[in-house]
Length: 369
Ligand code: MRU
Image (cartoon, rainbow, N blue to C red):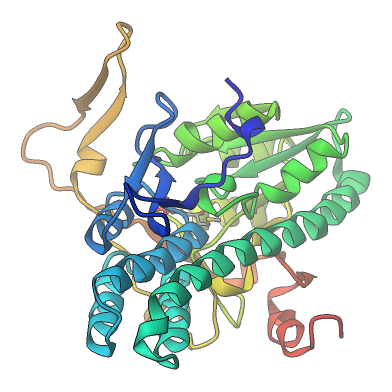
C-alpha cells in the first residue's frame, strides 16, 4: 500500500468518543515502522509526553508540533495559569535537544496566558493546528529553495546523469508534520523529473535511516540505497556522493548544527572530499540564544539498551529484540553531536539558501525584503 497517496500527515486532531468537539490527537507510531503502519490515539498530556520520550513521534519539527498538542491536551483538564505552566515544564523535560519543543511550548504559553481562562481550551487546539499548518508551509518553501540548489549542483557535479545525495537519520515527512526538511528538496526534485538517488545512512542505534527514511523514500518511489553509518566516507572518496543534506535539531545563529549522532563525521568526510554539505532547517529550529554550541546545547543521553539491543522482524514475521553485547560491557549513547559552522557549506531555510555566516542577516530582513 502506498501510504503517502492517502495524504497522511504525521499528527492530526480527532474527536474522541462521544464528544463532538476535538479532544484527542492521532499520530503515526514511528516505533512500529517499517514493519507495521500503526496509528495511535493520544488523549492526555501524559500520553503525549510518553509518545515524545519513547519516540513514537520524533524529529525536531514533529516534536514541536506534538508539544503544542500536548498543551492543548493539558488544557482539557485545566487551563488555569498554574496548570498550563506545569504542563509546559513537563513537556520541556521530555526530550532536551530539539529546540522546536521549547519554541512550541513557549509560543503556546504566551498565546494562552494572554486570554481569559474560559477561552483558552478552544484557543489551544486552534493554535496547535496553526503551528502544524505553518510547519507544512515552511517545509514546502524549503523544498522549493532546495530544488533550485539541487538543480545548480547537478550542473556542476552530476555523475552518470544521476544526482547522488547522502542523508543521515530521518529528516523526511515523518520527522515533520509533512514534507520533511532534508528530504523536502529530494521529493521536489523527484517530482520535477530530476534523476536522484539517495544514500541512506542506517543511523545506529535506533536506525531512523534504515527504518524510516528508506520506508518513506520507497513509498514515494525515490531510488535509494541503505548503507552502514561508516560507508559514507568511502563513497565520497570514490566520487559517489554529489551532495550531503541533513536536517537538524538545533542550529545556532552562527550556523553550528546539532543533529543526530554521526552527522559531524559525515561533515568531516564531506569537507575532506570537497563534497558540499547542506543542512535544511525551518526557522523554529534556529536557536538565536546559543553563544557556544558545543557548550550550550544539551546533548540527550539515551538508554543503553538502544545500543545493546536491536529490534527487527524474524523470517516468520514476528517482531523480535535481540541482544548484541557481551554481558557487563559499558555503553554510552549520546544521541546528537554538533557540527561546527566551518564544515557547513550552506543552510536551506524557508527564506532561501545561505552560508552559515549569512544566517543572521537572512532572518533580520523582512520575509520578502
Ligand atoms: O532522535 P530523533 O529521531 O528525534 O532525531 C531526529 C534527527 O536528528 C533529525 O535529523 C532532526 O530532528 C531533523 S528532522 C527534520
